[in-house]
Length: 200
Image (cartoon, rainbow, N blue to C red):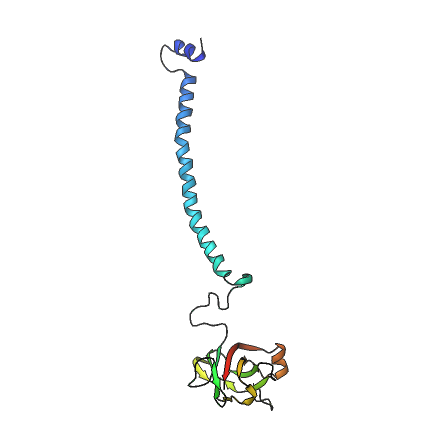
């Protein structure tokens, strides 16, 4: 005779203590499983959105090659890390000038008064300096939230030749000479390199 039959005989048909304990354990175990599952899904429901936000933030930061953030990443609208410098010849297509044209320099978002410097590199010819001039003159750019034009223009002469050039533009915090600009040691609040094609 097995234990269950013996306990049943002794208890006159009623559940014995060990039988009640085993049934209670099974009921409690079955009842506990869904709670563990629901707790898992509750934790997962909180963790997954947080992980997605973190992945999105990391993806935005690493948007450029080499893992470096793009310039101006997460900068509020209207706030730039430096002034936006430009150059153009009036009445020409963007990025084009002809010999004899005036080259006009401008800036957007100048937050602090500064000095403007610029030079051109055209093919294998000698570097062409606009500012500072031979005597060290540098035009002043006044702080303004909008668009401002440098009060001195340059002339596109024969020294530019015909073909592609690169314009190097700077907004400086203090007076700098040509050698300092070329060495990269100038203190400034903005710079730009602009491609320019000189047409015959």
